[in-house]
Length: 360
Image: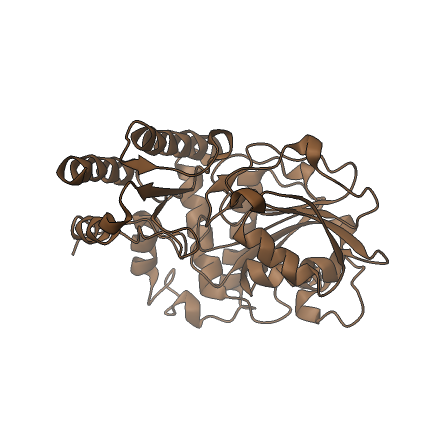
């Protein structure tokens, strides 16, 4: 069977070239007689793989030596707890911006450790927009300001970086990272689950400004202590070695395709095409305010929800997979991360137009 166009929000499709290289190296990496997944994480071969992956990620994002790059486990959800445990210090208050389901989960976890000030929220409009910055109620004495640049479920995205007034800015970039250039220097911490633009599930990247490390609250587990992880080169315990290796292949793939400037150009073009197809039709609708629509996750509904099942069945037969929207939003959702080729978006648009003619 040929490769399908997998629009899953995560775990998401990986570049075919990366999978093919991994297949070639599966049982014998670089004449070692071993698969990467069998290697000691402390052996020279894997240490070289790990070092190259970090170097490539630093190059792609232009990460300075002021930041540690950590390869961790537990998904972005584990970072919801790790962040307050590492950054609170002697403070008790933190600021969060609530723009969707993942913001809410981060807020709920932070409440276990701190007084959470929800400085702005769009929940009253079902997360269809980003609150105007002038209306944010920020606390200048907060330990940090946390936001989610892209809400995977609702398809709302910041196309600007908030001003944090000197408070460390922390971003869950799970659905944003590597899709375009990012000015890392504006952030205290950037973290991201791997299963969208980085690699397979099981790995989490945390980019942490070094001056924020070493001040954990009491009883912080050592595997969550950023300084401990950094001091041990992300190997204080056995890391997700194969996911780390595959992430390295993805970083190399991005570099060979022109880096993040090239990714940005392609991703914007893909998103613009799909939004245009939705907006030009009375049959499809996107619920998100135009100026904060996501490049990566595009939800849309049909004029008649009774047609949803037929739409999904026919799309599946055409190799357009995993288009069902999240249960909290309904309808459809097309996630078009880096690995989604432009051909996949074109094929989806063509199918949408045909389906509308037949059922509209």
